[in-house]
Length: 393
Figure (cartoon, rainbow, N blue to C red):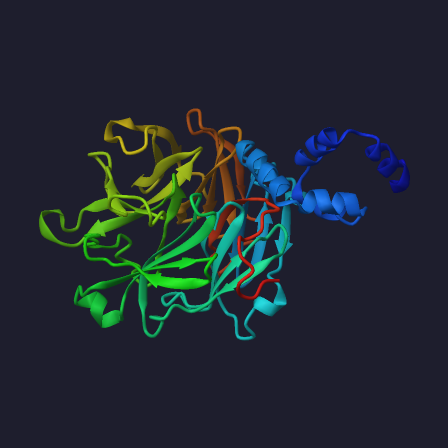
């Protein structure tokens, strides 16, 4: 093996564009180490434009990972790797300065461009939020919204507004539990990372007559799926002729665009809302449906907003899953078209997208656990948040 000095000398002789092309193909973990080699490499890898190009290439290659929580510990797994490859699983620690001393619960409530939105401790109020880049370890604590006291959140989401280069958090809440029971007016709020502030959105004209579809678990806010500049939720109409019917609602993160910021995306006619959820698969909006106790189906909308474009992506059998429960919320698409599912909170199973056959036997790296996990998919990134407001580590 050549010494580092010799490698560095050879790299110096390469044209700048060739060196950049090599670095763009490397994983984030290697690039973070290479920042310590010399000032030139530090400058190149720290360049925001390099970070953007690196992320774009990683996204196109679908080099994604799953981050899931167990207790208040986070684990990252490269789900493109075989289950037997234990080197693909690693424990990731939130910076201690951002972890409350009394932490007893941690949940992923959003993922966007390599950043994760993490909720700590409270399952309903969602007042203790952190934006975290698990690849670089950087964190930002989100200040409490002005309406935080006794608020009952039932929808939440995290996305990116390309028109302003800003990351946005969305929360839809009732002012308290009694208001939820009485169907009173909701509170619609957005948080801008750039301005480090919350804003109450005028809901008059949004026609937001929806509640969390997961009516048997109303104390768990539904996490939205970000696609095409919108955050999407599977919700439940609560008024009028469509009461108790499912609906996909989409919220536009661009507040300067003309038109309604909240609109519906059509569902297929034969949709049944029990035990269903929403996701993004290969750049398409997707429905994950438990059509039977032993069968799970994924449909995708090939042309966004067009009802007739819903097509079946995969149907899989759950008969070989060693659990009474596989979550329709946690299904992810690999770069080779394979589909990974999370069962029993911390176990994984992989299917082929051609016929839905079981490719790898179910694998649970932690054994049976009474602590249920939440999971989110992310892409490793060198990106930084667009503002230095607030505490970051």
